[in-house]
Image 1: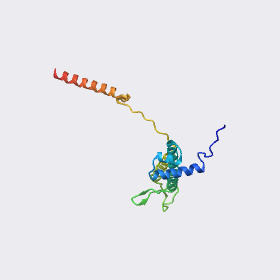
Image 2: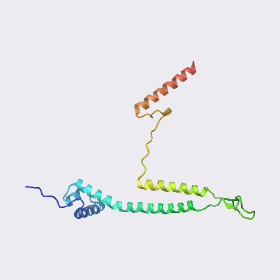
Image 3: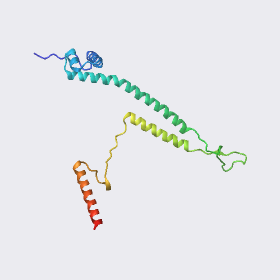
Image 4: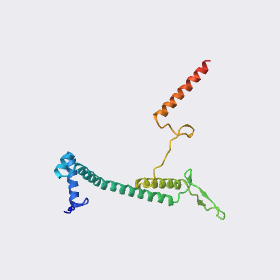
Length: 182
């Protein structure tokens, strides 16, 4: 006789309802064996459903937080771009520094020089915003770093090597002391 397939698929409404009930009962202090008995299933299956329900419960707020942070970064980026595109006159001792060009009349004030400092600061801020966005979205690869000892040699990797190095150091110190005493 052919085995009948279950109508309760993992993503079905019945399974989701079970997940919800199991999570509520678990949060109320019920133990997994009690849940398994109540729902007539294995303890492993209960653990699986409760964990899945927990992931779904926390997924929503995490996505909302990410969206909120990205919106903030967008606003910061917009402001930094406005600063970058704005003219910033160079000021010294409370006066705008101007430069006269050939052909300017003596009574003309000349052209105001631009201060590069706010522009460079805006660029720096945009880079920081971009780095933060990449971190939030997981776009950066983790950096691989290799720790090395003296003269670029690898660090000692186990206790035997550390003991050997300590012994060699003690022997070198004893030899130095005995040479100094002769």
